[in-house]
Length: 127
Image 1 (tube, rainbow, N blue to C red):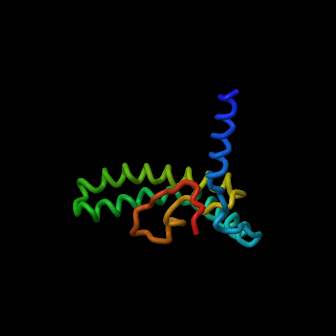
Image 2: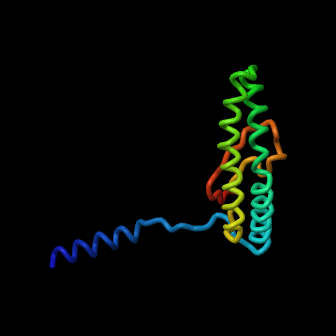
Image 3: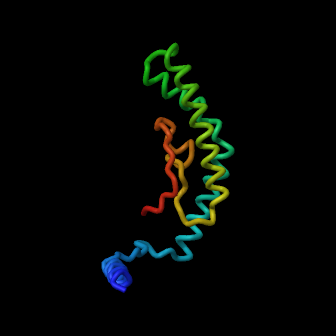
């Protein structure tokens, strides 16, 4: 009987001091449709233009290394990686457009900032 009383008391204390999760941003219809529309648009664009990461990275790495001999193969390898990543993230954004998250690639489109190396985030809900 003491064990049941202790267990009940411990669970009561845990429920009493547990924090409640609250959404920091109210998802309204406008926010939902703007994020869903942006994810569809970025998904289609990134799937169709993902191949442009290959020449972009070759150019970036040749500029970083100041040598075509070192920069070209390194840029080609990173270009293949970023091509697959941008195309895959575009397909993921296209498949999950109905979730009110931000698109997962940064910069959003390949042409937004051609001099910046791309990065990819998963399920950003931020502001």
